[in-house]
Image (cartoon, rainbow, N blue to C red):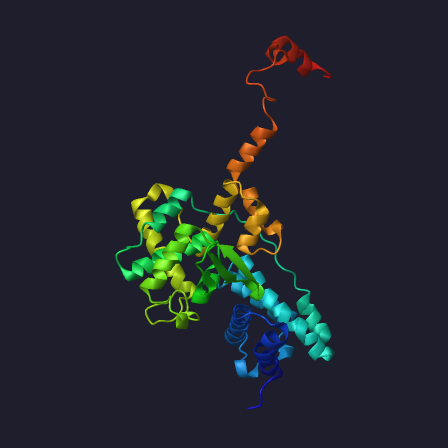
Length: 339
């Protein structure tokens, strides 16, 4: 069977263009691949177009629009997920404009599909007490419990994304003072994050416990599962949920309704902000491109807002009504003025 133009173009795009010319990270390529896997399954199930017969000509604006509505309504995906899928599709057809200029009009119609606006979600984070309770849940007498303790502690202490933690290798850890961890984030950008002395001691003990402090182990994953393979995002999420459920049972009053690895990242940022750390340093720690992204934490903390207002307006508003407001005759006259 002769391959279709869509099959050829997508294969070249994912296997050669993105890794070779763009230098996209493996996580980005995987995200794009997942988007088109879902699109192919949609066309097969909803449009009766088998994967082996799907062509570029069939992927017009209406089809892409129907697909986006389908993943939002039928698959119950969030608006942010919908926009993420659209961004991957946009990138693909933007690339095709130069490869197949005869179909540029069709591709530009797809590129004209707008990103859908969504309401800004509030940031959820744990209190310091909730974080402390969570880190007390793993059983330190077992090897797996000690691994989970180091994993959750580093997830919080570094403010890293869950995929960034999953990708860590032993060589990324520097235990000599000042102790640091080298994190590779979005777009293969790396950043050096300092880790506090208690965290460094935990990691040092963990490396010795698992014989990962040997020179030949530098390229080993820092955190592995039972099979000796690096932990996945879902694996780390499972571990977090396990201990969070235990914490919720023991300390129901200080726990939110749910948790995610990203909440630990939010929690670290909020705790730093509440401690008076400058937003610029928090931005660098989190790996944000600009400080505007980091400012969302400052807008979230109502306690900081109240403190700022109290400092800015001391003793301006009196505790008691002024005399003219106590004068009922004057108030009556003002109310009747102009009638």
